[in-house]
Length: 371
Ligand SMILES: CC(=O)SCCNC(=O)CCNC(=O)[C@H](O)C(C)(C)COP(=O)(O)OP(=O)(O)OC[C@H]1O[C@@H](n2cnc3c(N)ncnc32)[C@H](O)[C@@H]1OP(=O)(O)O
Ligand SMILES: O=C([O-])CC(=O)C(=O)O
Image 1: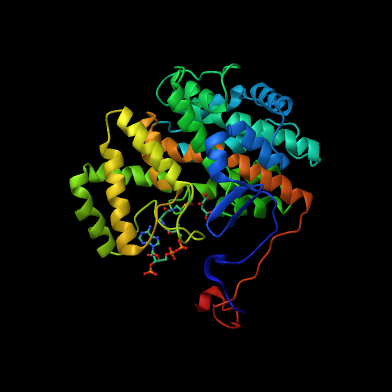
Image 2: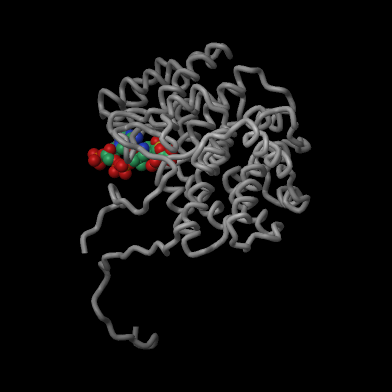
């Protein structure tokens, strides 16, 4: 048997949701640059789930459904209060809470297309409520219900802080959500598909995907980037810090990618947002440090930044706690996970590769008294 480590380059499914060809990312054939500049996140959700952009009426219907499904069972809110709330990571809380949500959905195991679609709507609507409720409860604050007059991006920031966000914050956050929504067969999406290919339920698929996204080689890198920027502290310290890490053969978080070679097309949008927002908050050093890191890593290792690198300083500039960065990635990416889960159910086959066994040959059982 020949083994492809990390399944690099292995084509494991067909999909009509998103594609990466020659470093160009498209959702259903729409270039990510076009969508980032023009689309609302709700339009992108519709696009990923229906493979077409919505009409005004279809978009309104989706917005109404999301708004109607945003409430959380009281049991889930009470559960947060049982967690070691000061120390638990919000990604672990989200993973557990999504699994718990499944217990309060009477249709969790119902497998019809309509029922699975409505579970997708429910999860997309409730995940922002879960993240913001957790973020508030751990600070001793009450959760805030979403407002009907605000869009998805604005509502998240509103539910987090209780304040109506500035237009520039809404624009930046919407763009970040659009950019993170789907990404072909990345690790968390593959995890979701493997899980539901056993004909397990939607909640199990999303719970598994959150677990995969949490790791620092995947979605967890955005929080790790902010930790690195905070440790560096000032542009003057970048050179010594980065060269020290590279000399020690340590990875610089937010750089490199399994698929992109020339660069991640999402990074330039986040870079520009980082420049703008850090200027507006009077903290340009976050951007200046990031640019200096990029210069060194690109010239020394020929590794361009990925989507996680500049998203860190963008979210920081929006006043978001650093450990919420990866849950925010999940809040966007769940739209893609759900599209892939529905696609997997529509044309399912169990996903079960093989392993090349490297352990000992046949052995005879030795009784414990003789070992
Ligand atoms: C949304 C996302 O998931 S985007 C990715 C987010 N993750 C990160 O930013 C974490 C940092 N980056 C990485 O760990 C990697 O680039 C990955 C995991 C994203 C992709 O990695 P892979 O395709 O598996 O490449 P792999 O880890 O095997 O690295 C190949 C070589 O490049 C080096 N390399 C890769 N990324 C980095 C990095 N960020 N910093 C320094 N060196 C790196 C490796 O050390 C390795 O060098 P070697 O051949 O001399 O041993
Ligand atoms: O595709 C990948 O391997 C990781 C990534 O960039 C993403 O999930 O957005």
